[in-house]
Image 1 (tube, rainbow, N blue to C red):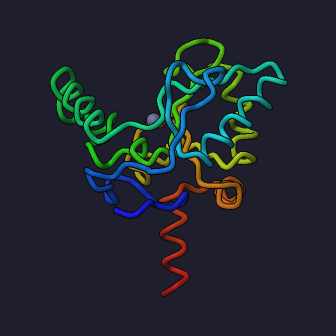
Image 2: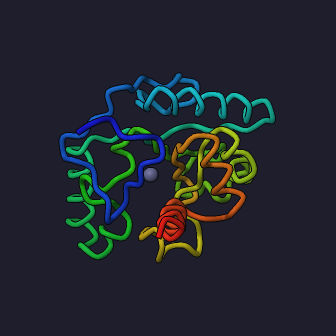
Image 3: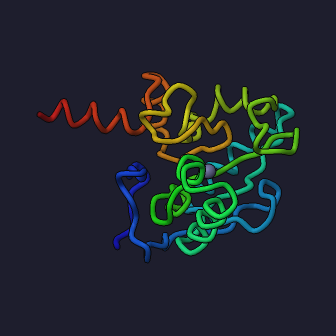
Length: 188
Ligand SMILES: [Zn+2]
């Protein structure tokens, strides 16, 4: 499978090959990551810029999950099925091949309150809401769009799509799914 583009849609209807591994990744600066975290170079660069600028305003944004391999996602999904059941697992975790984390373009973040699950309550969440798009990132699974994205609200999960598209999605207040369906309607 060829390298995917920064705007490629990956969701429950658009999986990646089980063999897909981004070729152009590097480690994030450990200042902005919980431990060794890989991202596609362009996304890594912009994420570090975002974290640096946020920190200048007293915010502490840390990556807790970035690239996840197909095998890792499989273990994660199987673990949720085993502990919480299939229905919960498929709502809260992606099946292997269907996770955006396999693209190397997605990042789960935590703020100064130290728990990504509580990111919405961290002051850093507000900073992200106002600024993430300036660095090419979008809040990928917003509140109220669960039926469109297929995922529950995830205030901690951001996807790199580049500045141009991030700005457009931010201004129109639409998801990546809506962007593609609007686009296709215009072509028809
Ligand atoms: Zn995530």
